[in-house]
Image 1 (tube, helix red, strand yellow):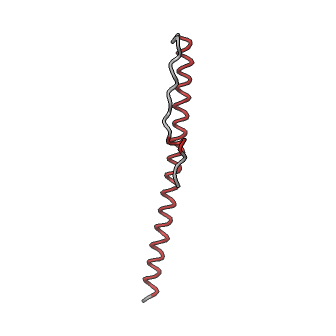
Image 2 (cartoon, helix red, strand yellow):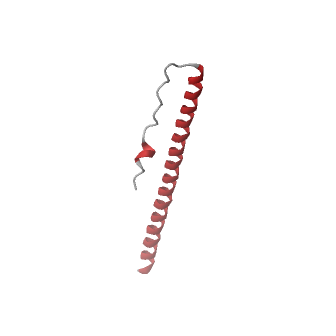
Image 3 (cartoon, one colour):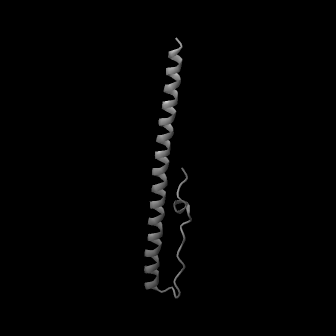
Length: 76
C-alpha cells in the first residue's frame, strides 16, 4: 500500500517577511517551528506505516513457512 503523497511532500519554508524586523522575525520563527512540527508528524506517520508493513510481512512470512512445514510432515 503506497504512502499518502502529503506524507512524502517537501516541507515548504515560508517566505521571509519583508521588512524583516525584530517582530517579524519572531513571527517567522513561530512559522518555521510549525513547519518542523508538521514534518515530524509526517515522519512519525511514515515510521508507523513502515512498522505496520514490516509486521504484515513478518506475519505473512511466518504463515508461509508454517504451511511449508505442515506440507513436509503430511508426506511422512
